[in-house]
Length: 218
Ligand code: DC
Image (tube, rainbow, N blue to C red):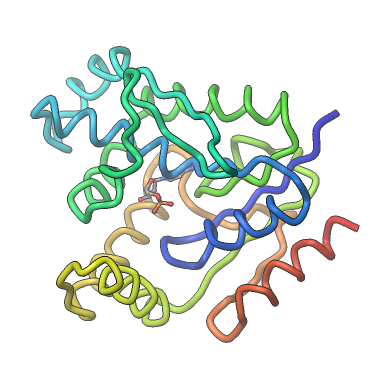
């Protein structure tokens, strides 16, 4: 039986940094499910489909083949045979992802792929619905959060490091809007699973959070 650690929480709580670190320390595979939703959003943007065209999204999603592979521990997302890692982190894709991920057909397709991965490998999987929907029997479940202000500061530092212009209050507003959409959608809204441990990373270092989760595995 494979072992699974599910980490859910809002954007910018530090899920991916922490999940990657835990995966490295435990020799598990890190599965970034947000990147899969982002690849689908990129596909829709490139097809000229807008977020409010839910019927078109449902029929187009069958043409999007998303797979993942690993290179030096990094997850690579392939969209119809093309490595899209460098294209899915823009603000435009973030906004589209938050809207296209409410679509039932998009979710069904990706949840199936995520469950298949967790069946084959020991995984640290992060997302919004891992503990509540994708892996309800995960061995360890964590709901990782931080204040929207701390999350906006983290995001703006990431963007600055990439040389992208940004304004803190715009980023914070975007984060609050995205949280609202993620938490209030009909299918698999973001929420803490009943058996998940709540961790607030606002005043914790990355290592402190990672160690706390690794201790839960013992
Ligand atoms: O974790 P992220 O910021 O890369 O996620 C991008 C968007 O994808 C986010 O707005 C919500 C959506 N998402 C989701 O609905 N379910 C997941 N398991 C992961 C991400």
